[in-house]
Amino acid sequence: MKLGGNPENLREQDDKAVTASIEAWQDSARKRSADVAVVIVDLKRQGAKSLRQIAAGLNEREVRTARGSKWTAIAVSRALSLAARVAA
Image (cartoon, rainbow, N blue to C red; front, top):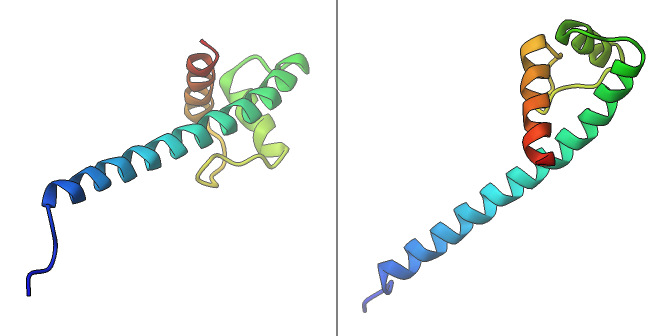
């Protein structure tokens, strides 16, 4: 008895699954970026000018990064870069 089939079919399914996973992750990142951007705009309106001030404001509001960490100036910079790419 021979089991299996054409290995190319499995590779195609794997490729489709990986592509779907990446697209889902990217969609989630875009949505989160948009949500955080709204808070950042509000912080800027309230006078936050530096990346550190924005990070402090996000932490005071208990907004966490995608991985659940506190915000740093670098994380804010990356979030702003992502928001700019998504908006473009």
